[in-house]
Length: 120
Image (cartoon, rainbow, N blue to C red):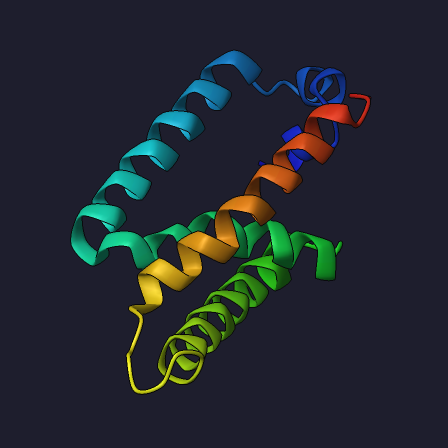
């Protein structure tokens, strides 16, 4: 994964079978996302947002990004739960609904920025 982050040409130069690795990573990511969403429901959507937020915070190695992803995810869920409990008192809104309402526009914005960025 680290070689792929340096660019496709660099990864190929390092001897990484880019096409196979990329396909395997996509398959694993889709399977893990499907399992997580099936188990925890809409809260699993946080798993799509947290890595992008962590990557913006720490541009260092993958280890730091993984730790920050967990922290960002925990913070997002705790904030969504707090907003769901307090925003429309005495009615409580599920945290999954709050994360979806807030998270979907942010995730679409991340995707649009990534698509507009020139690939190097």
